[in-house]
Length: 168
Image (cartoon, rainbow, N blue to C red; front, side, top):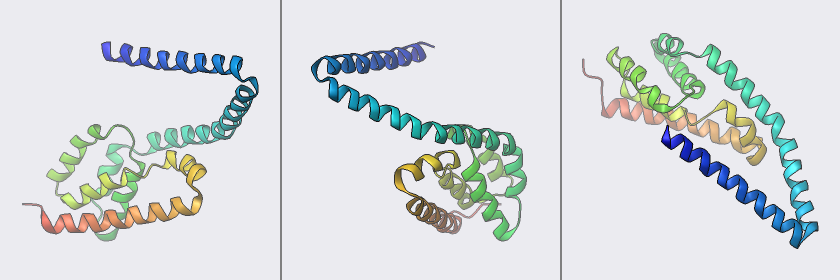
């Protein structure tokens, strides 16, 4: 609880400092202040629709993608297993440490280390963050990056499965 209030105070101090800098800027160079304020407003207008889309995507993902759903589909044979593991990693939400017990349970049920590594690797691809990434970096770059990340996660999973075969 103390850490939370400390963090909140830090955020509040930062906000006050920024407002203070803007007030000083308004007195020193009013045109620069107006230019900065206009830039800020334009940025907010561009980002708000993206944030709304992100919120909607997160609600949908949290509603449909549950640990039970992922566990069920991790048991699929062959290429289906890889596809579900990749999709599960991409759609998984929340802090990573919350997934460790589920992944440990999957390992005990016979899911190889490579599949678990692929799942963890694909957690870096976040659908809710894609619209903002596209906004800043462009669609072509994000598509190439995502495809490479998925491809490399499969290679990584295969290598790990060969190095660390599941002991039975």
